[in-house]
Length: 184
Length: 295
Ligand SMILES: Cc1cc2nc3c(=O)[nH]c(=O)nc-3n(C[C@H](O)[C@H](O)[C@H](O)COP(=O)(O)OP(=O)(O)OC[C@H]3O[C@@H](n4cnc5c(N)ncnc54)[C@H](O)[C@@H]3O)c2cc1C
Ligand code: FES
Ligand code: FES
Image 1 (cartoon, rainbow over the protein chains, first blue to last red):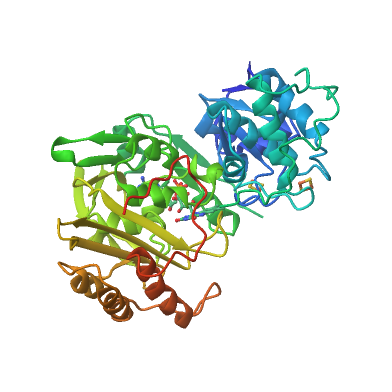
Image 2 (cartoon, rainbow over the protein chains, first blue to last red; image 1 turned 90 degrees about the vertical axis):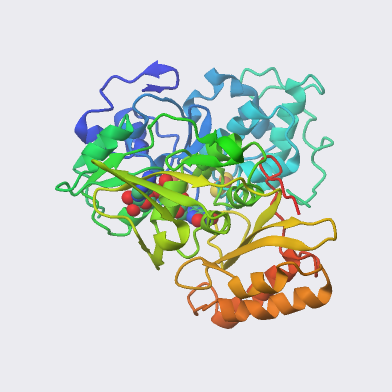
């Protein structure tokens, strides 16, 4: 098992660890406290991580089940090339309390990895398992569409180093049209 | 407090799974964990599990005559990708199933084994006449979907057995699945309907098969409605007759999600929508990436 590109310093097949939830191993053994526990039953997505690039709830995975897999948490997204996504969330003020954000970011990263040209509907679908009760989904969608466009070279965005110092002015861009996310 | 799982074994091959689940152990299969680990959290004791999620094999295998074999332990995401447009009813069911975070782990085997009358992949499999392929140590068994579903939360799964795959005859081009639920994602079906048929050159429907979820102790075929539609022209009168016949095919109950009366009206309305008799009123699924509806 590799977490954020590094092999873990323990045996995930050790009987006790194997039967422990991935979420607990990430937080308590590895100190990766970005992933949160909201509901513990798969509804909220605060615990979402990437398993071989796919978004999944780490509260519903036992560590032994992913002993041979590549796990990415929010802490590893920048190294995976998603610093620009994180910067776009900052630029679009797409964070309020922040509790949902690690899961939201990982689900958005998974979307961008398999779809370079996501439509607003696609973002809605990708976030079906991520509940946010304060920011709302407009700004998430704006940020994702903005980053997708920037990656295609269609519009200037930030410099991709994850520090959020990209050009100002992207807020209120063509994507921030206030349409209901998902539409149709 | 959630009681710990004290034994977790990982099956790498189907033979491993047979051995690890063989009678004498209290271990139960664990696949996506999206039902079992939720139940455990609400107090069910799950002392020992055998993980089936790592079994190798193609999610979808194409057999002679267009028949398909679907791996029961593959994620729904992998099944949808492997179907590649075939079996539209199951593709629709996967598109409206939970959300991506769940579809990436949840399996057909887990959905079937729960025996839930609201399980969303079951109507499509029942309408398609799928066969459940079971195995355990030194035994293999095939059971039709209709025989497999015994009652609410009860299926024909014996001690030590697990579901390896689903076999189904070539799915027809025309088919789909619709679900009515509280919202688009992460919602349990209040009523669901899967359908398939062939259209003859005169616009008559033949080989009509309809299966409905959450309206009876198990997912059920709508035999009376099917009989009305079989060989009949696609007219508003026929649609109205079929919708009226649904009532005798189902036995809905009141529960915390919906009343029996609402379910009855919904069931008839869903069929009329599917027959093109009234415009769709429930929001269509946004999952354009995996959805493909063919009427
Ligand atoms: C947030 C959320 C939303 C959901 N939304 C939906 C929905 O929209 N529609 C829907 O139908 N369901 C939904 N579910 C329920 C659940 O996701 C499904 O029933 C899923 O298909 C279960 O599959 P699994 O692989 O995760 O099963 P698991 O949880 O691993 O197992 C479920 C049961 O099946 C047994 N089992 C698993 N695999 C096998 C096998 N191969 N052979 C024999 N027994 C087996 C297990 O022992 C256990 O009893 C939802 C669940 C959550 C948490
Ligand atoms: S904590 Fe895992 S989905 Fe809510
Ligand atoms: S920012 Fe508070 S829940 Fe999403």
